[in-house]
Length: 117
Length: 111
Image (cartoon, rainbow over the protein chains, first blue to last red):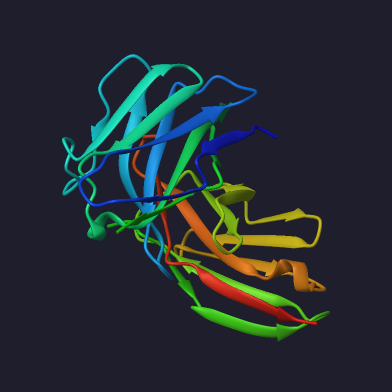
């Protein structure tokens, strides 16, 4: 199946610093990638949809200046958490959409656990 | 909101038993998908069932879909300890590629 690599898997940073998370599709081209946030024991919350070569589309309530998304190539999307604060601590997961006929299946990275001190 | 609702929220069974999880959704769909998430990891796609299908099998997995009741079920037969994970249903949002995930069922299979 399609493989999505997410890096880093775990990061600790000081409050006020920025953190970049990478999401790569390894064996397929992903014109669309998604960024989710997941709180403990909860479901995934879609933050934004990332389209190659264009601006990301953010979900309501997600600060675009806080969570910068860049999708510069068909295999790489990055999420930068700017000026991180403890409330940004969470599990961030990316996925890439692979269309097969009429199906839209998402392939997920392993996630990044962010802890802001 | 089209968010699916799984039930039960948590399920604990013994190895060898069957596990059944249910999902309800609110709007019309063209397909419904089930994903699995091991603790602290990303999600893995398990199976997709189209709106014109009523049942689908994949190995020990059996998925049903009842569009009149806007519900789906995932049955895992002959469960194993390695099946311990959270299971989410997901439905496409409108005609977009976005998926809306349910709240998940946390399955624990005891050896």
